[in-house]
Length: 88
Image (cartoon, rainbow, N blue to C red):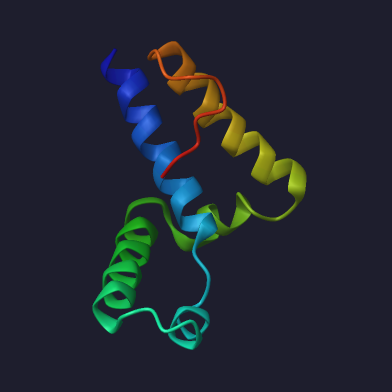
């Protein structure tokens, strides 16, 4: 169970990271600066944990992105979540 939960945490972080755009995008939408700073800190933390190249590799192609997303979906299904639950 510990291994499954560690994998879920990693995959959730990878999917979350992949969904985040540049700070300028959020600023243009009027997102409060404290929210943007929190996102940037989260991205830096993920990069320290997994490496920026590794995180970016998850988004190289639609196939790569789908593979990471569906791994998260499958692990969550095993944990009792609804199929295709990809909330981050």
